[in-house]
Length: 259
Image (cartoon, rainbow, N blue to C red; front, side, top):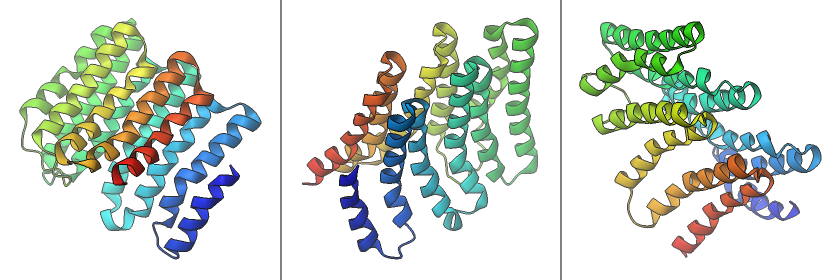
């Protein structure tokens, strides 16, 4: 880990009082913390969750420029993922906890200016989640419980009037709803809820594939590719202590492409 002092020192000296300095340093802080948890306490898993601090810090630093609500919206996928994985790994609540991801669109729709439309969206989101949990816990029929989300899915696919501040195109809404449906279906059929949360990465991956070109596309995709490789090796083979090496692909690809 002593070799990490090289980029840490360079960033500290070059960026000075730049407010984004902490964002640039976070990958190294997270890596050192990860090594400490793993080597000193054998907590390679779930110690890898410290890497989630990287985007968390970046979003918090940018909070003043994007506003309070959009900060919450940006933070929600990361926080929800952490809570979901914790509940899944610690209490095996993969089936029960996945509706937590609906917090993301529930916050996003608050950017809508029409109060009635907000109420309708929230009714479908909250009603679907509560109905799902009620049927699941009462009758132990989690498969049939998914039917409570049919109104939300249909409304999300057919309604084109919501005005998100994030200017979300219709294809992104289709992809978001499709990701939820795919996660629920794959999780129910295989019972591997703890793995198939990765399906939600299809949303940022699609955005990168459609909106970037050239070298920047592969460089932008590498964090998601590395995450899939890391989690696959850790979840299926228990290689948490070694799988972190997948994240080294990010700077390696950036250097090769920009070289």
